[in-house]
Structures are given as C-alpha cells and as structure tokens.
Length: 323
Image (tube, rainbow, N blue to C red; front, side, top):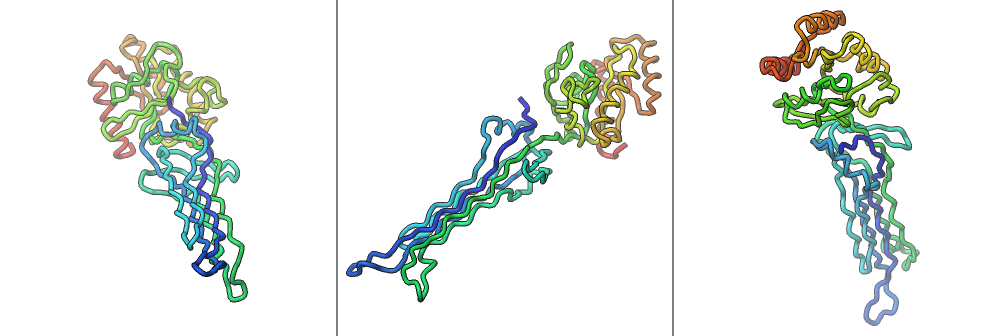
C-alpha cells in the first residue's frame, strides 16, 4: 500500500548529564572534583531514497529518535555521544514543520540534511572548580535535542503523468510501456493509488481516475492530484467509448485548473484510447472533436504494436527535447 501523507515526530538525542563526583585517594578522605561531562545527543539527518513506498515505515512508528548522550562518570570519564540516525524519505517528499509552517523538499539521494540537532552534554563538576571553589557540588543537565513534528507529503516525481476519467485505459497503457503491473479491470477506480513504471530511463505515473469535483475532494480527490504537479508532460487519456469526448476533456481540465494553476499550464497531449473498440467513422468523428482543444491528439490501441512503438518514441523525444 502506498502511504503518501503521514505525520511523524523527529527528535534528536538529548545530551547526557554532567556528573558530580569527588576523588577518593588513599590517605585522603576528601579529594578534588572528578565528575566528567555528559556526551552529546545524536543528530537526526534526512536523506532521499528512490523508493516511493518508504513512507509506509511511518504508518505505525510515529516517533523517530536519535540516541541520547550518556551521562558523565567518575574519574573525569566523559559520557559516550549518542548515535546519529539517518531517516530515509522518498525523493519528491515535502516536509512541513507542523508548528512553524517551514517546508523542506527532498529532491535527490545525495544530500544528507541535518534536520534535528542533538543536545549538548552537560558539564561535570570538575569543569566548575576554581581558585575560590575547590569542591563545586554543581553539574549541568544535558540539553534536550531538537524535536520537530512534521507532515511528510509525497509528490511523485515522474517525467510523464497519465490522467483521465476512470477506465480511460491509463493502467493498461502503463503496463505495456513499462515493467509496472497495476491492477486492471472494467470498473471505476480500479487504480486506487498512483503507479510508477520505468520505460528505459523515463518514469511514467498512472494517476487514479479523476472525476468531476475531484479538486474539491470527490472520488479519489485531491489526495492524488498533487502527484502530477511535478511531471513534465500530461497525457490525457480519453476512451473512444465516451459519447462526448470533448465534454470529458473539459471536465478534467476544469478540475486541474481549479486545483492548481501550475497543472493548468503544464504541457499536454491527448490520447483517444481503445480505438480497437470503435468504428472508423466513430474514431474520425471523435478525433475531430478533440482537435478543437488545439492540443496534439493521437488515436491509439495498446493491442497495436505500431501504436505502442510510436508512443515510446513520442515520449522519449519529448523528455529529450521538450517537444
């Protein structure tokens, strides 16, 4: 199951407490201070990973914490530093601090970002001795590590997004172009979560079927509209089975515009899908209607090997040239 939105608390480690201790030497009932410093708390880092399912790790584990520093010991022994932790989050995830509203986006798998700083260890009483205070009975408590409650929101990064009403043929198209195996059936909302497949080095995303009112949360709603915001090209799939293909097109375009001006301006082409189910005259009539959109329109069938090869070339050319 794809988890694409989750709230979790990230916490760095607390610093260890400083120690109050005095030396015990032969013949001396009271020696000088020898309390050691506490260790520093571990830091919490964020790093991207190319695994869109990685947020599922946070479904039931709502707090991720680095190691605490160990308290100081006798004989000026310093406590061990807490262990750092690296939290791996899918590339394309937006991290929002729930309290401050600050955001950070994970854009690659290379950068390791210090997200929560570990607390500093407290000083032991040996650090407080002076000419006027030879036997200090004070030590510092360790400082608490940074803690941040965050919303993790995955926005899939794909080169090309397949959009359209339920049963428009998006999942079937994805399955013949890539190694993805989405669930396919002849009923609404077969696809209940985004699927990504790779066509050589090109990432294709099949977005769950949109319906009228999706921008207001109807159907599968806005949960999945955000997944196409980062695509370079929208491929609008419209089945030849629809009576009024132009009305279908306008329905989806309206939802995209109301959800995001970015989506409304994104490059788009139209596929009239399932042309193996239509007559020659039906296909001609519906292609003519869709050309009124002033967008490039293609009639395709996944069962036609020439169509499949043409689509692959079309996608590869667009990703390379932007045209």
